[in-house]
Image (cartoon, rainbow, N blue to C red; front, side, top):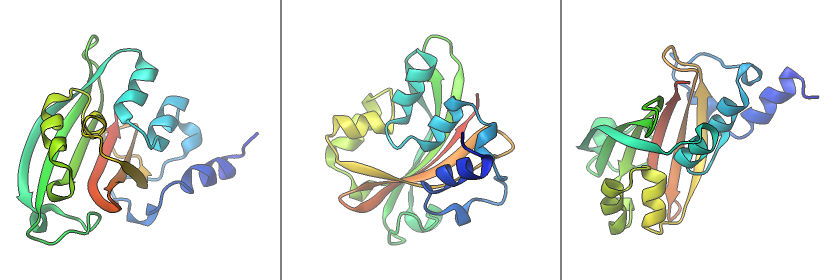
Length: 178
């Protein structure tokens, strides 16, 4: 059986920038989380699909707010872009289509010039969000988990990057609410 220390080490090894966790996100003992929340923290696949597997209903990414900014106005260094590059800031809620339960919320910084042209069109038509849009655009990608913690307004939260053509194209923060 895993001890609390070895469980923490097991999770910690998957995150590459735990030092960068915002001060408002407190330490989080993964042994206090449900298997659902541990899975959500560690998944490096499509979050919506993983969430659907747990809640057994379709989950839609409902865009709350979306706007374009020059990188210099919003970038925190994780995208490694020039200040004048275009960044799409996107806020979504992940909501069960049948229950109307709000399972999570997310904020994404998207380096538009690093994405295939088909991605932008797919993002507006795919109800399942960024992961489904990347699949629809046939964009090869990989994820790098950065940090996690317990904010005041969620059970747990995490931040990760998605790379396209070996360059960071997304920085995504997710808050898991239930």
